[in-house]
Image (cartoon, rainbow, N blue to C red; front, top):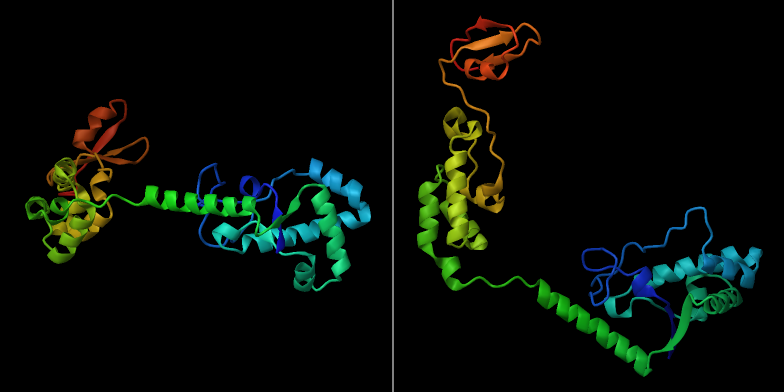
Length: 274
């Protein structure tokens, strides 16, 4: 059975699993494509278009290009190992609901400009190409499979107990245990977590209203919050006086005034925290 293949499909139109242009040796995206990449020439005319124009003539060139655009859609709407293939002129004419001869003419022009080529599904070249595509799919799947954590790291209650003891909000312990097991931290990561907890305990967002805004431990673990930036602004004591700048009207605590020695300040006691 003879079908047609869009030439340079992988180089021009195919994408990888992360929807980026496909590189040599990479696996094609498994699911059907939603969009097709097209080279952008802007207002310039590419060499292929000029050749097609000469072969088909100005009147027919747009018709041929329209057929080719539909072939791209047909070729993209297939599974990974069949993408880039399109049926013959008779089937395409049925899809477009146009006379067969129009599509036959378009196919002839597209073959002459090397935008498509006829292939046999029984040929050795075609079989070898499908085998290579499947091999790349398997290799990529193996490379992207995350390593299975050791049983000790998942079930080590001693590490979780140290985390639970350090975390200030004791809520939803079972959910926290599952989130901890999912992260499967080693000693180094646990040390990073404990250090982050110690720092975040002093943050205003954690001390405000008796810790009301401390996230649940499972939320903290799932969000990777040990990497969160901590506001380094000094939290003033409840009795620290507040001063207002005559120049800009901003309020600052007494401990911050030394950073702005040239400003003129007036004392404005708030009688406690701002």
